[in-house]
Length: 140
Image (cartoon, rainbow, N blue to C red; front, side, top):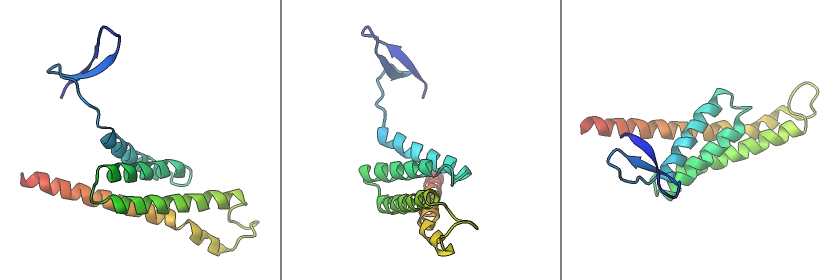
């Protein structure tokens, strides 16, 4: 659809479609799309953009829960895993990280594992949803 901004007498900007009807913005869908974009952008450099991935997973989990989507539990579990892993990552980097001068055991790296597991769970669920939607659209 073609949209344009319409300025009313009160100088308010209103989104209208080509028929002149006001359009409601679906904020839950916008949260979902922004969450997916955040997951993709964060995947470019997952260590430095871990907060972006955290935000994206929470937005996807929240929007699917509020939309009463059937996959909301998976997205919430992945968001919790990502938050736990990123928290561990920040804490370990705060106390000195890993390396030759660090006093931490190599097994402390296992505390970061929920982060990539949660990201992979979200990514696989999104890909499965996309493939099912594409198959459903091809049948129509």
